[in-house]
Image (tube, rainbow, N blue to C red; front, top):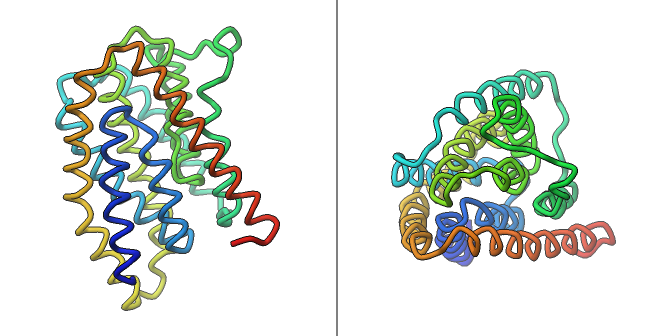
Length: 252
């Protein structure tokens, strides 16, 4: 990987981990876009899965006392169902389709609450979240906004939301790593080995960004937290839809 690409990835890793440390989402959306601009889809998915697993795992540890385990266990049931379905699917999305999915996923946070009454505290809704988020995360690379619609109506604090979403996302990213690793590293090459080394070096950067974001989270209130999440992911979604459109008309 060129030095310039490594430098861009290092900056993106820190900034996106910092954002995710604050909001429990959004950072992964940006990082996925950066990786897709540098790497083929399989390698981008794998690198994203590793970095996001490290960031979410570290965030889980920092906020471990705020995790709602009752939600997590039901989420695992849904995730297990998703894994079973993924084993039966041979389809892999192209770069353009991934950008379309990245662009559409953020708009899930604007779904009318009068129509969608999802609440992660309800076992059936937590199971649905596990199924939907695990599958979407595997194909689009990210699914934070999809997960968010199960938390916006809960009575959890911002720390509980970020902590619980982090542990569920950790599971989703591990599934993504397993799903894409066989494709990304078919016939281990020197280039792939170098990529894996670069990604491993980025993990401490990701952890540091996560720690910094957590400090900012402590100074937000719950209302401003939810408002900024919606604004941020909507802007990111629009950018990715424009990127997908450019790919469709032949502008790489």
